[in-house]
Each structure stands twice: as C-alpha cells, then as structure tokens.
Figure 1 (cartoon, one colour):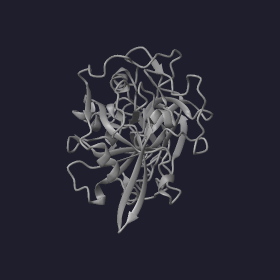
Figure 2 (figure 1 turned 135 degrees about the vertical axis):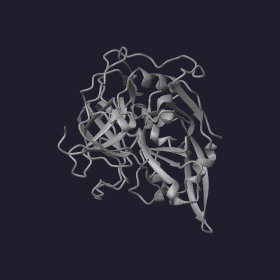
Figure 3 (figure 1 turned 90 degrees about the horizontal axis):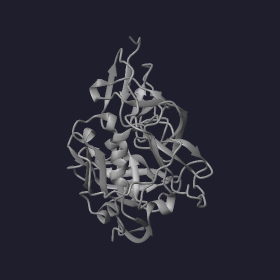
Length: 374
C-alpha cells in the first residue's frame, strides 16, 4: 500500500513510453475509406471557414485551458501492463528524406507543436466559458495534413460528441501584440476527427489519442472596424509543407528518453499557477509504466517526471528529438497529470502506450486527403 494517495487529473500532459524501431516503414497506402471496426472517423460538424472566422483575436485571448474534470485518488494501485501487441514499426518525420531542415521560431522548440482551439459542443458559443484550448503537433502523413493530440481534446465524453469550431495554430506564440505573430504559419481547420472506439464509447483513457485531418492553412489579417472584427485571408498551403511533421512509432519499449512539449496554464491542486499558456514549454525525462487507475480503465500508461498542468493536454512525447531538424518520433501524447506523492503538486505526466491499436487509428488518418477549405 502507498502511504500517501495518488492523485490523477486528466487534461494535462502526457507521455507514452515507446522505443524507436530501427527499421523504417512507409506510410500506409490502403484506402482511408476502409476502416477497421474499432476506428471512428467523423467529419467536423462546423464548416471550416466558420470555425476560423469564429476565433477572433479577442476570443483567442480569452480561451482557457481545457480540463475535462477527471480527478481521482487511489491507494495501493498496482503497476500497469504495457507490452507490445505486435511487431514494432515507425514512420520517419517530414524532413528526414534528405530535405533541408527548417529553422525554428523558438530556440530548440519544434514548429510542429501548437495550440488547438475549440468550443464545447451543444453550448452557447457566445459564452467565453465554452472557449477552450489544448496542445497538439503536426505529424507525418501522405498528404501532410495531420495533427496528433489527445482524444479528450477532440471529443466530449459527457455529451458524446466531437467539439465545435476546432482549429490548430502551429508554433503559436502570444509574446507579441501583433496578431500575425501569434499564428506565424497560418491557421488550420479540422476536416476529419479520427479516434479509437474504446475512448469514444467506453471512455477508456488507454485510448486517449486522436489524429485530426486539417484543411490547408489560412493566413488571417484581422482589423477592427466599428467595434467589429473584419478579416482578409489567403491560402498558405499544407500544414506539413509549412512546419514539417513528427515521425510516428509504436510497439516500442517502455523506458526511453523523451521530450514533451505543450502550453500548460492550469493550477496545481494546491492552487499554484506556474504557467501562463502563452508560450510553449517542455519537459525531458525517461519514461516508465504508470500505476493502474481502474476508475478510468487506465491500465497501460507510460509517464515520467514533469510538472505540466492543464493546457498541455495533447502535446507530443517525442523520442530521438533533434534540435537541428526540430523533429523526432511521436511515442505518446500528453494525457494525464499525476500527483504521485500526495503533496497537491503534479509531478508526473503520462500517455497511453502506443501499440497496434494506436497504429490502426493513425493509419486510417494518414491517408486522408483534405485540400483547400475554400
């Protein structure tokens, strides 16, 4: 038995422990319309142009870090069971094909990582309480149009539906009052959400990952006239062409060194707020299997020491990350924050273990075409 309670709060950050396979395999070429029975793919219910136009600079500024309310304590929990369920595999990052590495707007930080914004479903969009954000990253795909994040950052398990007005802003930076400085590579609206049936139907956090196909990006210039925002836009092309994309790997070992990136902003259980969410942060450490949390069917998570709070949810866990290219291999996504010693401070983050089930969802998403939104 543990002498102190273990607390878990779920929209924070996460990691997945998986090692990098030595052999590379190409992104799948099977038709994306032929889906495994346990993969759910659904088009966004919000028109892309409407979603982008919704997120005026004022609303972007007012959006709050997302917390889906998961909070638990459990004593004497046993360790999780994270083992490969098939052969290991990996897909290389965009840029690993002997192309020139892109420079980063952040020192040692990846352009691929950014913030996703969305509104809660079946809610009053005019109410700022329903304006939320998570973290996410561009990932390799056939059409360079794929974003990886946590499933709880795309799907509301309370209302059993996907979020509205979902957009991704890579390399988001709020250090400049100029709007264009906050979205240097454009804004990308969701077309198709791809998640595992066990999260959508069973609310199983061992499957708290999602892959979102986005339309080609839009660069927006906002101007306020008569107290109303007016916009002009131009197409800027595919996400992966503009910021690159992380590699993807699955069925790896549970102990390896990783970086986690995200935009934390929430409080610790004791009320302390060390982050603002305005700029990207990172943690570095070695992963290990985390304890079981039966209340949320959590039995296969990998985590490491990190004090990320809400807002970092959905950010990537990257193995073999190289500052020169700003790329590595996605082995997990920020899913759960843990207070392992019961002192009301988050000290670990965890991710579902990426196995063959994860690859199925990725495979379904990696071959979907999107194109321009207008």
